Length: 550
Image (tube, rainbow, N blue to C red):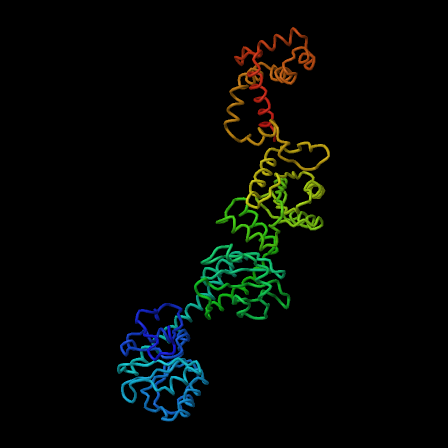
């Protein structure tokens, strides 16, 4: 588009929708209105400024119209009052540009049939958009239409602002948490909203029109390039809209609204949303005692374990923005199961504190009731066992009945969920008061043998049905007759089929022991000479033991 040509830009009436809710009326919008489009408007200068807002329309045939303007007006003229000399034209334009007029529209019907060169040069020099009309236009009708739109937009803007205030008031009154507030801000603004702490860690991000990866990649670097401020304002090279979150002089962080990919501008409503967001976050922090960082770690871990991120890149960007080193790191999941009656609050704090003493970066949070999780980011040469041992002993000192389990070490963050699932399986396969392996205070995958595997599966009805089919008739016989053949079977299987050793264990004579074995074979319909059948009964006895654990 050539701004130097008098007919540089002909506007189509369908270019812009000036009636769109919340849309500030611009020069382009006004020129696209049928009432002006009928005059065949041509943009002569200032084509790059057609997005300027139009505050009002002013019709003038004065040589000094600027004295009646306040700025933002679209000035309409037939050209009759324009001075004949170049100096006078330049002064006319200088005064309009100086007061901040939005644009000058001149009708080429009465005095002129092409815009004077002096006027074109003066408007171009001052960056004032100059628009010509090739046909006669009813200026009064133009003012009526435009003013109605402007007033209608103002009324609608007031209604939307009122709805924003009402929405945040409702959030505050129902005690909404930090995540609820940030989510509401993103929904109302249609922009990505991020809450960060004082060390530029992105704690909560609600993307809108973008992904977590796009919003949070290199977050700390970008955030540090965006200077802090004491009020809501545009800041930094990316043009973030930011507001501090503070109370009585103590600053806790800031909330940032990021430009949309297709629209880098912010309007008054965006400012209102962000200001109310900062206020609501302050109230939420005062009401809810859980620190922001704990909430952020907890939610990030849950989303990672349950693989709720849209992509591995989103997960990587989110955890990096939280301060977890994701490059050149190895990852290990630690799960801490607590007695059901215990709260996780104090152990969670203790686990975080203990990790800080190790110098190992980690995320810590509650994965489920009575279950804590920690994701450790280990350096290339840092062994994990001493660290986990330290954490385990700290947990056992605080809660002696706690069970600490670990998964396997992984080299890629995308494999971290697998490490958590392994640690969880170990925890679920660990009965209460399970003896700890010698020399360590935590459990790992290699500890899970037959007994612990069956314990983990104890609520599966197939295990229960198998146990009953294998041993039910023997248990029923003992119950009816007051015998203890089940113990005899146990001694026999524990002795690996050695009848002499088994009889000695049971304190029975060999003849009595043999007789009982024959009774058991008859009741169960089995043959003890079959190693497969002895194995099946051994599994059933082990399952019975874990099913009877309380």
